[in-house]
Image 1 (cartoon, rainbow, N blue to C red):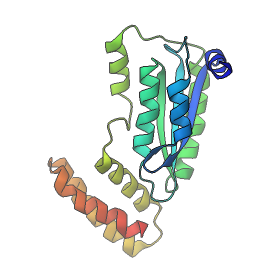
Image 2 (image 1 turned 30 degrees about the horizontal axis):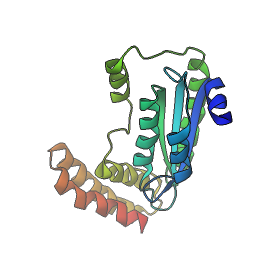
Image 3 (image 1 turned 90 degrees about the vertical axis):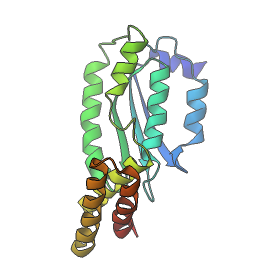
Length: 187
C-alpha cells in the first residue's frame, strides 16, 4: 500500500534495472506485477536497462519495462539500453532524458484510447529489437570504442557484410557476420 501511494503521488517513474540472464531482474518483475497505480494513464516513465558482461539482454529488458508502462497506460519516453560498451555515451543521453522528463511530467497527457497508446509506443526505439538487432547494436558499440585498429577493421568488414545482407532482407544470412564482428572485438 505504501509503495502504491508513493507511485500515485509521483509525477513520473524512472525504472532502472540490471540485466540478469537476458532480461530484467526478478525484484523489478515483482514490483511490476504487484504495484497498483490508479492514476497511471498519461503519467510519464523512463526506463533504463543496464547490462554488464556481454551486454546481451539489454533490449529485452527495455522491452519488459516499456511493456509495463504500456499496459499501465503510462507514457514512456527515451528507452535507454546501457552496456559497459556505451556507458559514457548513454550517461550523457540520460542527463538529457532527465531534463526532458522534468519538462514533460507536469503536463500529464492521458491516452485517449487503445489506438492512441499503440500508435505512441510503435514510434519508440528498441521496442521491436530481436536478438539479431541487439547483436547489431552491440557490435556497433564495440566497433565505436575499439582501440585495436586491426581487430576493429576486421570487425567492421564483417559488420558491413552483415548490414548489407540485412538491407537485402537476408536476416538469417546476416547473423553469422554480425556475430563474427561482435566476437572479434568482445573476445
